[in-house]
Figure 1: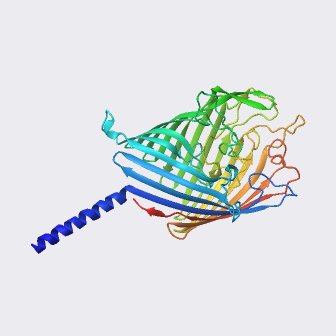
Figure 2: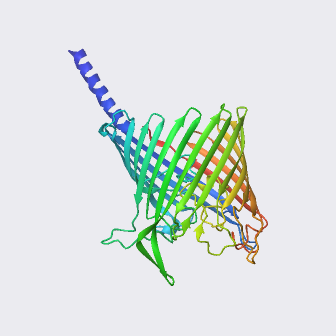
Figure 3: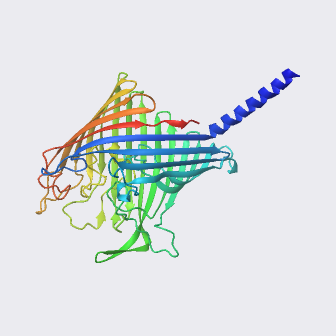
Length: 457
């Protein structure tokens, strides 16, 4: 009898433990503290001789919580982004929008639809609804932009279908400034938060996209069709009146990532933009890119590449067609130099860009990696000299050094230094418009990233 009672107690204890483990297995929680100190002496644009270089420390504090249940997933990520010292130590006031502060980075629910589909052979079908990151391929056009402390997100709905080596996503978003009794048009310009990082300054009213990807034995390939719609507007003097119609821009293209004999990798993509831009001007623009990487031994990687993003003829004052390619909502910091001179908040004219680059990576140890990138930047179209002629199209040479050290799987250190050797074309009124600039620009940073899983799934 005693043994029977002990067996019952033991069994009850095991069931309790198993149920606890099951509950914990459904719940995930994470945190991140990322501090980045930066010395800016020409980051984003050349600095004037009379200007003083800037130094500051920014911090991202992020908490995330996920829960997986029967046929659903929930996920939220709340973050606070601020610069050390922007709030006085005795203040009890909310940080203004212009200084970032607390924001909801992600908040979405995903509904699993596998057993509701007519074809039960499809492996995964789900509907993801809410604020989320939208990221595909190398993030050239659509990416989470994690380099920015605030990162990038969309309020969207995405239908996701995956079966064996295929994946197909269809997504859409519809933005409104607030709850309304009648539609008065969408104001996509916010002085506190400039839209995106591609210098267009306007958030889309709505967007729709379709993405088809396929994995092959040599790598993967994909097709993308993305349409973003911008509210029509009229101007009455200095006043902008937004209407209920939209101007629609369409971006379509191909992506390929292939590895040959495990040593040579090539990433290529081509995209075309048509329709009309945010100002109602007809668009006809292209992006073409090729990146090669060769592995030498076990630790050393190097490669060449180029990016071509079409632009407008700078000698034409008011072109009837916009030939400037806009790289949508991607991760420009990853491609066009760490100093962020192109397709970010600081504009550089509308003449487009040719980026010729050489990249190296050396894995000194499993947890220590060195990177060196060299970029040669040139205008993709004519740059006016303001007097009826044209300028030398070469904009400058940038050299980026970066080292990454993983103390543990949770704690990461990263440091970098970049230098820009700009030309007079770069600082001209038609490009960056910097009078009496320093002969070269510098930027350096040190970043500490602590990102634990508080409750692992």
